[in-house]
Image (cartoon, rainbow, N blue to C red; front, side, top):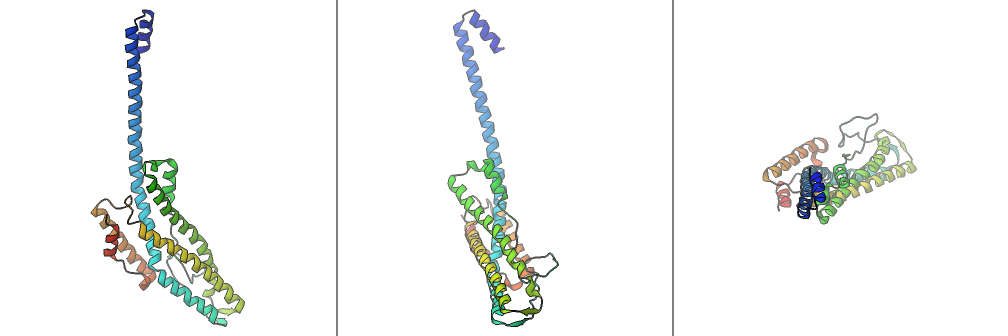
Length: 262
């Protein structure tokens, strides 16, 4: 319609009408672009808000896993020390170690004598949405802080695989046998390597537990949400006690509320 009208005005050399038609066309195109950009911006903001909700869940899952590790850290160290001393200070016959259901409810063919927590990866959402550009609306400072956070969570996830291999190699200690000095040193070395991996994991976990509650972007937006997190932490503590017994450090609700306060 507009093209036919412009053609007619050109034939008639009606330059005023042509100018008006040109303005109408340009204005229409401009408004169309503006509306499109506005819709895109609204959709981008909606995607960001939705991803941020899911990101908070991932971050608090990371917090719970990290809190579990540091909650039992002292008991873990004491058990490693006990087994290490039995290996180094003993000689000849090995009476075997008690099999433990240590942070593990499954059942394999061979018993575990040491079993550290194995928890799922929590950085998947962060990586996926970052690659999509969903977090482009964040400040560079927030992106860097979250990259460090989930980078630490990923480091723990990767370390725990290597740690599990070391712990699995210690299963032979569940059975009575004669151990030569060389064999005792070999098992002690495996135990030392698992201890080193655990120490790194516990150190990173401590950093995560300290940093996550204080991050404004991850902080719960209402008192009801804080209450939900507190309830989850109490429930998790009860679950851990079923596995770890008195090893679990009691949840300090007052300290937690202080750490999460604005």
